[in-house]
Structure formats: structure tokens, C-alpha cells
Image (cartoon, rainbow, N blue to C red; front, side, top):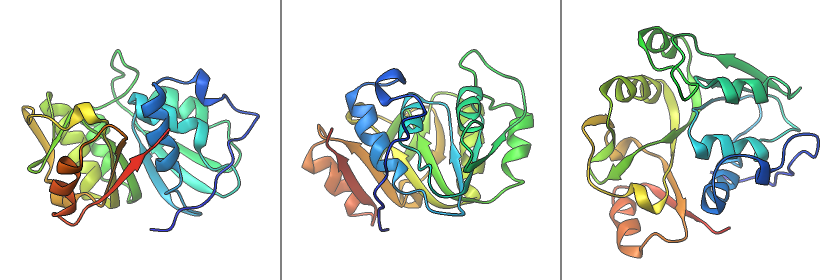
Length: 198
């Protein structure tokens, strides 16, 4: 998938003002380059998703669908982006993953889903909460391309609830601390692994 050069818009907040550490921003900057004109993009509310806000293209039109209030409040101010906020009960983190949000996921097709997970192994992506796992599973089922954003600390033991098998991923963007051994595991599954260097 070809990448495009992106300039961070000065009229929006800088990446230093957003959430996430240096590795989060290195991953986010690479992730934002996958967004193309006319696409529908899913972005959640994790720190890596929030870090992406500073790098979103501001010179092409596209649509963002999100279940995170903070993401929607930011993207709605960008003239080139159409923003859809999923409905449902807002949890303490400012996102929605309940049954109402689940129903919304099936109403749209996503060209690219930027997926964050608590754990990623050769068996797949997992999380602690079945409700959250089911929500993101629905997103994945309706996505043409799935890009996983995973720091080195996420390549660990499987969590309780499964989101999707690893083979469903198209790309993994990770940080510079990942080992070659771990990368090779996913490359053997046909997944593109990109190391983001801050």
C-alpha cells in the first residue's frame, strides 16, 4: 500500500499536546499515511488513536467513523472530514461499545480500520472484556483493510476475549523496540509489519 507525504496542519493541536508517548506518536504518524481520498476510516479512542489526530491529512476529503467522543470533537472541526459518532452509552473513557454501538457498526463499510488491542499473538487480537471484543469484531467484519497499532508491550499472552485471528490483519505498525523474532512470526502469516522510528 503506497504511503503519502502528510503535513501536520498548524491550525490544529500539535502532537506534543495530544495523548501518548513518543512511540505512540511514531506509530500514529505512520498510520495516518494510510488514509486516502474518499475513504471511510474507523478510529477508536485509545492513546494511539488520539495521537493520530495530529497527523490526519487535511488536504483530501474522507470520512471518519468513531466511537470516541474526543476523536469526534476534534475531527468535526476539520473541513475536509465528514465525522460520524456512534451512539450508545458513554463509558468513563469517553467511548461507546455497548449494544447500541454494536448495532451501528453493521450500518457502514470501512475502507481502513485502525485497530488497537490489549494483546496480539500469532493466534490473534484479544482483550479483557467480551463486550469490547465483540464491538471490534463487528468493525473488522465490515472493514476492507485492518491496520493494527501495537507497541512492543502488546505482543504478550492472549487475553480473555478474542477480537479476530491474526491472519485477518493486513498491517501491523509497531515501535522500534520489537524484536526480529516477533516480527518474523507475523510476517510468516502474510502480514506486513512496519516499524515506526520516532
